[in-house]
Length: 416
Image (cartoon, rainbow, N blue to C red; front, top):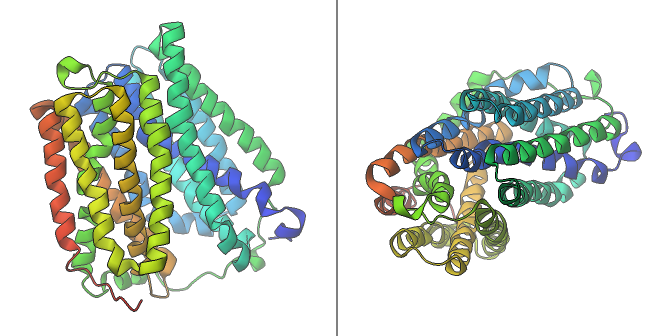
């Protein structure tokens, strides 16, 4: 970098870089479930195709070296941000077309690859533009910016869409406006970054290229002690949650006569994208404090229980059909437990990356994690339509058991 920290403070670009990273991910993987449901696509199709949209995050480690070798991280960031703006604009426009599902899904798939590439470039830029002390300091800032993007997507955008639906009495137009607004936000961020991001790194100032082959890095990952158990843990730990992530919003939005709660779009934005998200963040912070004090070995099992046991709330809601006043606290408690359990899971993924290839090994682990979310999510809609919501949520609870069993076999040293 050409004196990045003297001409440009990290405060001027780190928050916006990671806010721009979160917006596409949330729209592609979460908000799409809501607007497809409101546009009357059936649950099987929604769960199947929106789950496969997660595939680029499974595979992104394989084209990470392309981003490293070709051009600069700054160029990749600006190019992918502009491309993502175009994808969101196309999605917004497509919702007004008769064959909107195919066109919008294709645009979302392209956007998923662009967003995953943006994530690679952003993480690389973060390590090049900041020194070691700044990297440590801004970890919390970038995480907060990403969480704010989640608020923007699942909270503000969904509530905004709900209000427009009531005002305009036109669901497709309401979501066209909402997605167009998110595209406009990305366009503003693109212009801002074009003006504020530090200059591209010179070749001689870039991180040295490692001559170790990618194959060697992959092999070293799979040569770890008890790697089979580790992979089973990564795939199974969130198995029940993977189904629940796709079914929850469908359950909230579906009419009571087909087993849902019949909530409005605005109610879902408040329950899941606002109160639930606040609880998720609080659970993550509290989980981090507990692990730092008592260690991962003591915390992993209790936090796994905190992740999985609240899934029973959905069994209750599918059976009792409680009022909205009770839905809010139940969702908040479930998301708080999710925050606790996911924090322990994330720390364990970092724990197993102790070799000289920490970054690459962590990317492999997160790719396996994304695969563990994609496959159960893909079949969740089909299962729900075959057996209904109540039995689906019972299946969700049962699917938490295999991941809990793996906890007793994974390598974890208390001294570490």
